[in-house]
Image (tube, rainbow, N blue to C red; front, top):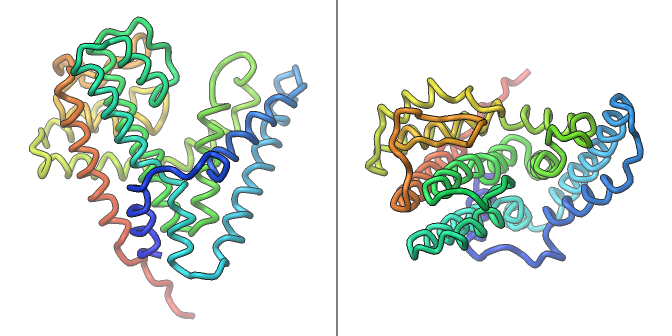
Length: 301
């Protein structure tokens, strides 16, 4: 299983498979189609309808993972099939594109790239500092959600659990909002994603605190801000890696009207994005080392 994990990370450097062959695209297509079929109007009925749709998709994702786990080829096949469930290269490349646009002074393009690749919020009125800050936030959160979490789930439960996690995370990204049409229908998706990300978010934050040493950043700041601000975000998990990154970089991360991380930090700027990427790479390296440790052996009966 450890060899499969390393192979998946190596293959991720090659980029994403075509959309028609990408399992996360398939998951997204199912979720879009399921939402189009919703008809309930009462809150309880919406909750049941959304929950039933989520469970059906989760069963298919885990079932396909279980079947593929038994394909011939052993660890090589499992590594190849795990790769599309990761998004390391795409995440780092997206941050690099936003950095290049900011560095060239093209704020409208930086806003567009941020919205296209990294965030769901409106970006049209963001300043350059807010674009840089949102990019750091998304890098930290998605490092946990889209890279560390699938690897952790694979290490714990193989392809079935990794596929189930990726489905749950995709469902949360598409259904997990407190809007009138999703408040009740998307509740199962949102709460399940929260539960599955409890361990990955904290592992990512802890690795980020340690990673400041080889990254040449602020270790005491990372620890202090993580412990103080991790619970100030609406999500029970996103604040952990984001606050650790804010403290390590010494920057204030402010999502207007929602939260402030490291309130006494300086305003982020374009030069912070390469530093954040360096921190992310070291954080991932440390997380992988943790995941490569042997699992505890079950006592013989």
